Image (cartoon, rainbow, N blue to C red; front, side, top):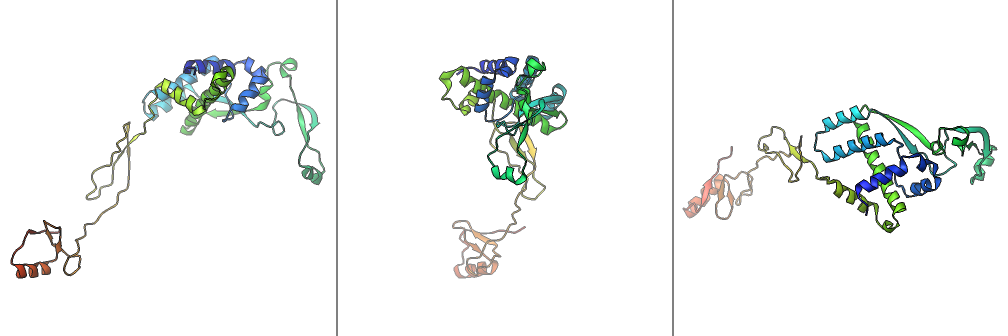
Length: 287
C-alpha cells in the first residue's frame, strides 16, 4: 500500500491540475468511486497551505481557541467547487448557449398534462477551443463561497478537506495501482492515520458538581486525555433509617454489629429486659 506522501502527491497531481479536468475518462472513473461528492480546485501553494493546517490541527494538542484563530487568519475566504448531480438531465449549467435542445422524458404523463415538451440549454462541450479560459468540468460544478467567520465553518471545512484528500486519494490509488483493488476505504484511512501518528483518544471529563451535601467528589473518567471541565447533575440521596426487625417500622436506632439486625428504642428495651445482654448492639445517633 502506498504511503501517505505518495497518495497525497498523486491526489494533487491528478485532481488539482488542468490535465485532470480536461481528461473526461479519468474524471468519470473517479466520480464513480467517490462516496462523498465534491472536490476543491486549488493551486499547489494553496493545497500545501491547507494541508499543512490540517496536519498541524490533527497532530498538535492545542486548545480549540488557538486553532480557530489560526484558521481565521490563514483561511479567510475559500471557493469550493462541488458536484451538483451525476445525472446530466438535472444539471444547471453555468456557461450555455441560447439554443435549447429537447431532452427525452420517461414520465410521459407529466409532459402530456402540461402540454409542454421538456427542454434544456445545450452544453458547451468545447469551451476552451471557442471561448478560452474555462474547462468543461466547470459547467458541471457549482461555486460555493465559505466566509471564515464562525466555528461551524472551520469544522465543516476541516472535515471537507479531509474527505477530499482521503476519498480522492483512495479512488486514485485503485486507478493507478490495480493490485490494491480489493482494499477497503476503512483500511486505507486507518493506515494513513497510523502513518500520521494521530492519537484518537477521547477527552477526559472532569465534572464539577453543585454544592450538595454528600456529593463533593467529582467523577473523573479513566480515559486519558486533556481535562475538560463540565457540569453534571447528581442524585441527592436522603438518609432513611432502616426497618426494625420487631415492629417493622422505619425508626430504628440500634444495629447489631454481628448480623446487621436493626431495632427501634422500644424493641431494644424489651430485648434487654428479656435477655439482659446487649450482645454487640451499639447505639447510633441520627444527625
